[in-house]
Amino acid sequence: MSLKIATIGGDGIGPEVVNEGLKVLDAASKQTNLQYDITAFPYSGGHYLQTGEVITPEQIEELRQFDAVFLGAVGHPDVAPGIIEKGLLLELRFKLDLYINLRPVRLLDGVKTPLAGRSAADIQFDCIRENTEDLYTGAGGVTRINTPQEVATQEMLATRFGVERCLHYAFKLAQAKQEDNTGNGILTLIHKTNVLTHCGGTWFRAFNEIGEAHYPDINREYHHVDACCMYMVANPQDYDTLVVPNMFGDIITDLGAAIAGGMGMAASGNINPDGDAPSVFEPVHGSAPDIAGQNKANPLAAVLSLAMLLRETGRIQSNDAAGQTADLIDNAIRKVVKDLEGQPMDRLFLSTTEVGDALAAAL
Image 1 (cartoon, rainbow, N blue to C red):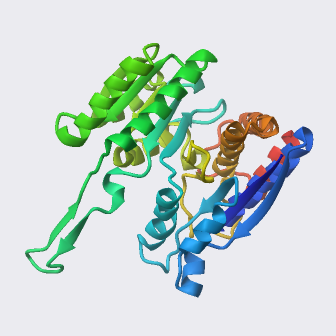
Image 2 (image 1 turned 180 degrees about the vertical axis):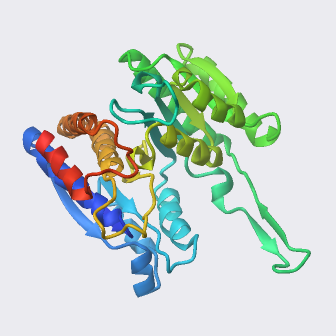
């Protein structure tokens, strides 16, 4: 079975880190006989400046023909904030129904964390962020712009349907980790139910009702989002699997990236678990136009995202070669990171291409 992978290099350092990811994929696939085809697409801030379009409905339909999308980064200094983010990233999430954002927070041996006295054994958890509702739906508006009476609203929305399907995914992940001895069987809901009583209440009721009815073997915990930020820093070893609504998930997963070595180590997947549309995998970092074209970007987050792409897509399609290739890539990353022990992952002494070469050599 051949995987059809679409790539969107994007802007700034995006094409650079995608290229290193594909270099690593080429080296790993030769050992597993994984068959794949790559098709590159130009969607980006630069593409918008040239064409006046971010991505059209027809182009999104074209992406549906692929098994997965590997995205570098988007964001152009000559494009106003929000145009590319809403027009491409959110558009793909909504139109392809990528309702899960999976963000692993895992400190690797050899990577420095800003948390004193902590090691890789202490920072090993997963954040499941609901990805298509909440403040990101765009509900609300602004009136009387640029007057003293200007009023702006942005509404937090939670549907029982959207909440339940996210919770089921999170419970199943916690259950799978418990079964293969990589997790402790605890799922923690993150919200702010003491103030956001409407949306928080929907999440809290669904969390307990679904857990009690369908996943009695999984222990349930609840933390307010502000407390979660403290616990992530003070007691990260207590977390195993977290489930969180969209806005709060956006915030706490960046904190998670910081304690796991920085944005240069932060991978993510925007996932359609039902398999009826391609999932989109991308490093969490931005396009970093200040270092674009200088061969300075750390590509490890992109390569980690590519391994996620292979593992998740392989699981949906029962493609064992994809999962085996992902394991090889993860092992190569661990080896190279151990060799780089002591370097800050946001400013490596090696160049972008040298890191890719080191990974390929490790494979």
